[in-house]
Length: 373
Image (cartoon, rainbow, N blue to C red):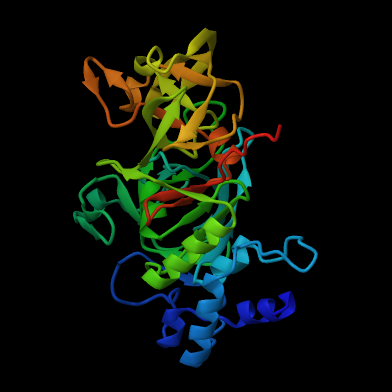
């Protein structure tokens, strides 16, 4: 079968939900539950026999298959995921290499930071001046992902458009997001949004993929097989009690747990693991500033090797950052050990070509290839 035939079959594939006569992105009018809708839907319907044939074919294909001349065929991750029911949302990079997205909220364009290390989706108070909070309404909210929400500063966003996808009734905290001259966004898409909407985040190619429901088990198996054939390795992540995902990382052979933090442009470890990881500090680099007035002196520290749960990763730079991160509930503070020893920043996510699966609690990375002698 040549590449044109494969491409045609990929164009025609439908999802299980489509075969059942359902559109996973249709908004349902069943109360204030968070939902999402796609601006355009194909409405394709297929016979089950054809679907099963395509399903078997997909399971044998890498995302980037080779053609007759042993060159990569044009089967992109974006096209592949769209056939599995995902909708792509394009992202951009901030001046600090952080992923940001343009959102339409109350008919105005807003810039939101996509931050996997930020617990709850947040809007600056200046963006939603007339929004009613739970305290204003005197109610509590039952969220499909978080359960009962009692935070009085939470509001429901009637409509929020990201790319071609419109989200309705998404909860968000109203807060003063800006915390320094480098903060140039109107809000933050937090870990709750990324988990609630079954997101995949392609860190290297700046795409956020969302889905209206959980990926069926057989589709998940197909996707994982394709990623493996394309050279990716699966890394297990662990969800924190207060949201956020951590990854076991070996720094100079020593294990640490790092919070996967797309909002942090650089990997930073707490000083409590500095000696154990054989890091060599090089003096104060600059001041680390966080939301709520949190600050810490940041130092550079050289390292020799890094691996994700035993999978070797290329060195993005010669240095990590080291700081006292107790104010962020990371590392150690007044004798209390927290669940994470540091922050995994964007430089590691980019160099490893990470694809983060928030619902599956895993991350796909490309391991370092040893140089040929």
